[in-house]
Length: 93
Ligand SMILES: [Zn+2]
Image (tube, rainbow, N blue to C red; front, side, top):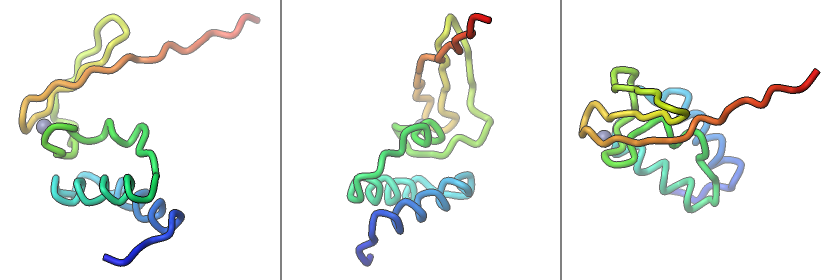
């Protein structure tokens, strides 16, 4: 694989995630490595696939929302990831 510049790598990552549902865990592993090598943070994009088995979430996984926490259970391996839901601040009028 040829060395990509940071902007090329970030473009590649954007394209990859715009079509994530057709990707395989192997491809996700590769794009994660590309991001790491290019110093690009995936940020919110990391929530789009299972961090255990790297399967992209297809919308069939179980999602639960409880007391400001969202939990998503991977359909493939059963791994549950939890994260806080940020409350939107209401501006005083
Ligand atoms: Zn999984």
